[in-house]
Image (cartoon, rainbow, N blue to C red; front, side):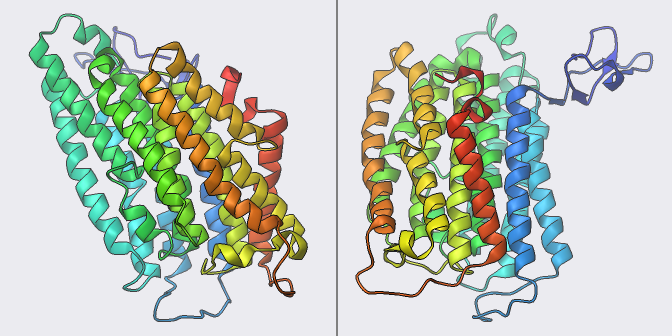
Amino acid sequence: MRASGGGEISTLCLPGDPALAVTAPPGMVASECLLRVSQSGALLQALAAAAGLVVLVLLARERGVPSQDDDRTHRPDPGVEVALLLATVTGASAVAVAHDLGTWLVGLELATLPIVALAVLRGGRDSGAMQLVTTSVVSFAVAVLGCGLWVTATGSLRLGGVASWAAGQDDGSRAILTLGVVMLLAAVGFKLSLVPFHAWAPATYPRAGLEVTMLLAGVSTVAAAAALVAVADGAASVRDAAIPAFGVLAVVSMIGGAVLALGAQDPLRLIAWSGVTQGGWVLAPLVAGDTAAAVGYLAVYVVAVVAALAVVAALSTDGARRLEDDRGLLRRRPVHAAVLTLALLTLAGLPPGVAGLLAKVLALRPLAEGGLWWVALPAVVAAVIGLAVYLRWVALILLPPEVATPPERTERAASALAVVTGLVLLAATVFPVMLLGTGTP
């Protein structure tokens, strides 16, 4: 439902729901929707809520479990933790349906700052909180600058309606808007850990604790990708001018993240570098203007990375684990090994991780159709490098152990989460439309 020109004000817009419209008092100017729910927005909100629920379970499992390193790990009041978690999910949900820059900016920061607070409260000096604080401050400043340029060019905070505005504007105004879009892309690039804004991720993931890492890889990634989709969709009329910036960031992120992941020796650092390259894959279809492919790819990635992190959490409460520790995991913990293998193959885009394969095809298709081979071909190279990254871990899981070792103790709640997310991935393999939408090849 859209606000009419006759004087209706809507805060939340849903198709065909007149109950959400309120008649404006005489003399008040009608406004567009601040929040507009769509199919992709609803999927992003569901992803944020599901990832938040997983983190909530991980937070709850710690109650009554003694800390092994009191100098590094602190436990704030559970009410504070839950409040910060809910604030993060709320921010991500708002960004997913934001239709103006004010809501977009507030939602994006609301999805980020509580994670910084949680990292500070739960960790000591080595928690990686300082990197998060620095990243948040810089990205916020860049985002504000981008919003200012957008408003300067268009005279409006609305993310929609740029196409009609751009039709009658001179080259100077269009150049200002394009620069604003690039600044907003850079701001989101910090939060999505795109190259060259990625340095905080591999430094923070291994030290922030599994709960904070899950928030960063799940909820925060959803918020950042939703913000990116909103900007790309709203600025479609100047996309041709912004294509070089979008394309270069996508290419260097896909290639750089995959190459640097080859040297990772612990799961959390590998997942951090994987997030860099996967962020590039989310950005790639946006170069061609295909937001549905970007959202579908994001959905598959988030479910797969949450499943992998759930297995890591089940095998090690603090995430202090090396890849070599998973050698022979199939014989010791076959269920955990199966879930982790499926998650890694999904990220790699190899059967039986069919959802990951289809997500990559869906991301490459608009690039090929649009003749953007300078983005598509490096993406294929990145996918090949990614095979080496993920299959290295899979090989350790499947190989027999060098020496006989007893099965490690596992955490029940995290194990249950791993099984549930593994079943979701399995369902997505059979019914890929549940994550990839109607555009599934």
